[in-house]
Amino acid sequence: MSYVNRKPRFPTFGLRLALWYATLFVVGSMVIVFLTYWLTAASLAQRDRQIISSKLGDYASAYQRGGLGALADTVRAEQRTAPERLFVRVVDRGAEALVLSQPEGWDPAALETASLRLRDGTLVQVGKSTDARRDLLARFRAALGIVTLTIVLVALTGGFVVTRSAVLPIRRLTRAVGRIIRTGRTDERVPLSGEGSDDAIDELTTLFNAMLDRIEGLVTAMRGSLDNVSHDLRTPLTRLRGTAEMALASPPDVDRYREALADCVEESDRVLVMLNTLMDISEAESGAMQLHREPLRLSDVVARAVDLYRDVAESKGVVLTAHPPADVVVTADQTRLEQVAANLIDNAVKYTPASGRVDVDVLRQSDRAFLRVRDTGVGIRPDELPRIWDRLFRGDASRAERGLGLGLSLVRAVVEAHGGTVDVTSELGKGSTFTVALPIAPM
Image (cartoon, rainbow, N blue to C red; front, side, top):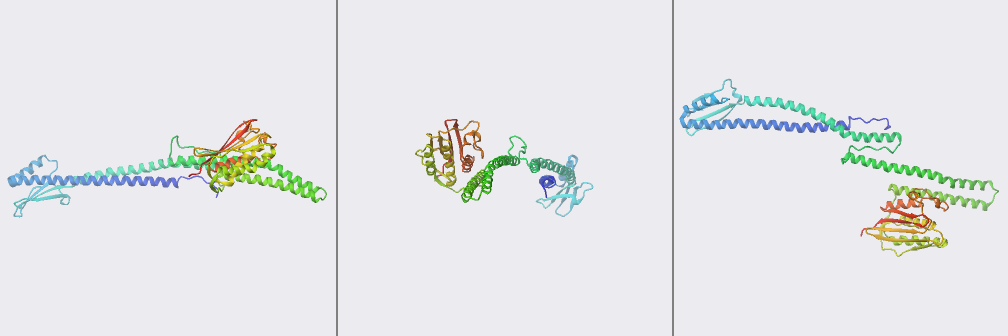
C-alpha cells in the first residue's frame, strides 16, 4: 500500500484525544457538581436540625418558667412573626398529648422532629417540614442540570478546538513527509508553531528539520561524490580497456601480455583504493565507522608516521622533522589515527619542493591535544581553501601530483568521528599548517 495515496484523517488519533479530553473534563465537572449538591443538601439539613434544636430549647425553657400557658404564648407569638410554622407537641406525665401548633396540610412523612424530656417527665417535641428544603433542592437540581449540559457542550467544543490545535503541527509534519516522499526533495522544512515555544511538538519539529538538514547534506555530498567518482573512474577504466585492447590487438608476446596485466592490476588497485576510501569516509560521516578506541600516546602515532615518510622526504630533498612532543594521551582508534597523521604528512611532503621542510608537533592546551603539521610548500589558493575537504577535489597545484583527492576528506571524517576538529591556514607560496585537535583521554 503506497503512502502517497493515503490522506491523513482526523477521526483516529484526533478523535480519541478529543474524547479523552471531553471525558476527563465532564467527569471532573460531574464530581464537582455532585459534591456541590451533596454539600448543599447536607448544609440545608444541618440548618433545619439547628433550628429545631434551638426552638426545642426555647420551648423547654418557656415550659419550665410558666408551664403549658407560657409555652403556648411563646408558640403563638412566634407563629405571628415567623415565616414558617413549626409543629409543637407536649406530652405530660400522664401520657396525655397536647398539640400546640400544627401546620395546615403537613405531611407526617415530610416532617423532621426532635424531642426533649424535662425533669418532671414532660416530653416536648418540635418538628419542621422538609417541603421547603426539598423544593429548594429540586430547583437546585434543575439549575445543575442546565450547568451539566453546558459543561458537556463546552467539553466537546473545547476538546475539538484543543485537539485541532494539538494535531495541527503533526499534520504539518505529515504533509512535509508526504511531499518529500512524492517529490524526492529534501529541502522541505516543517514550520514551527511559534517563536520561543519549547513544547514537545516544536522539539520534535526542530529535530525533524535537523534530520532533514543532515539528510540533505548527505544526499548532496553523495550526488557530488557520484559525479566526481563517475568522472574520475572514467580515466582508469578507459586506460584499463585501452591497455587490454592494445595487448589483444598486438602479436602474441608473453612479455607484452605480462606488462599489460601489470598495468591493469595497478589501475584496478587505484580504483579499489578510491572506492574503499569513499566507503570509509561515508561510514565516518554517518557514524557507522567501527572505532576500536584505546588510550594512545599521540607522540607514538606521530613517530610511526614520520618514520614511514622519512625516506620519501629525503629522496625529495625535504627536511622532515618531528619536534620533541608533549606527553599527550588520547582515546582513539590507532589505525585510523595513524591514517590521519600519515595523510597530513604525505600531503605536506608531496607539495613541498626540494630544500623545503616539514615540521610535525604534538602539543597540549587545557583538555585538548593538538597535532600540527607545517610545511614550506606551494600553499593553497584562497578560493580553493574551503573546498580542500570536499571529496575528490584537487586544486590546480595538486593536479600534477598523483593522488585521488580523498586524503583530506578522510582526515576530517575520521577526526570528527573521534570528537575532534581539523583546521588549516595557508599562504600561497609560503606553505600551509594543518592542526588536528582531539580530546584528552580521561585520567
